[in-house]
Image 1 (tube, rainbow, N blue to C red):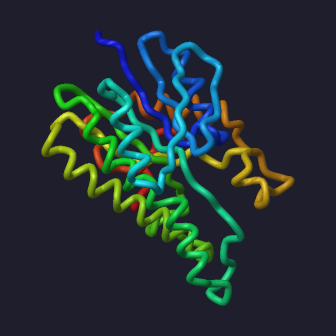
Image 2: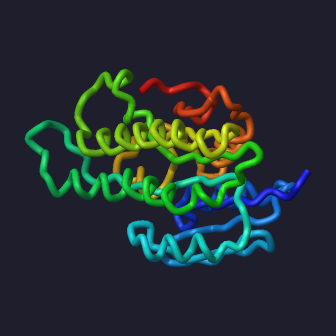
Length: 232
């Protein structure tokens, strides 16, 4: 089997960094490109750290061209959650713009410039970190309007990509991932004392397993950390 090359976006975040480290344990993997906005270096011989601006198309295009190789797997682990709305009274246009800028637009732009660098003659995978609260069908509590909407929109982008990418590679698999509630900077302000939270390492181990098990029948779907389908 040919060596596998992987790109992880958001490698300076808790989950992204843990994913890079978890992937590095696999001897079948040749290169892991660790992308972050600040270019944080991860100390492992198979990890190549690169700086990129997820919202700057020139930066994305130049970085993609610098790879000098084809990719097998792309994982986007980018996102933010700030002061979620408890009711409609808390809505603001600025909050919606912030959440879509953090949680939705980066995946679309990364796909635009990096999907062409996936192999076209074998199975490839593109996954982005979504969230269970982005499920319209599963929404039983309301609130968190802008965050929920940004993740629902992300799910729709992934669905659209899963259809389009099939035209260039029938063996491509594009899907969303919910990492569980992880003890991280993102979740810290909303953590409850009586609830247990995943470590980034535990979540990364589970997510890598989910990624590894995906087949062509999983294209366009959203999966929980325990490999269960999350409804749209």
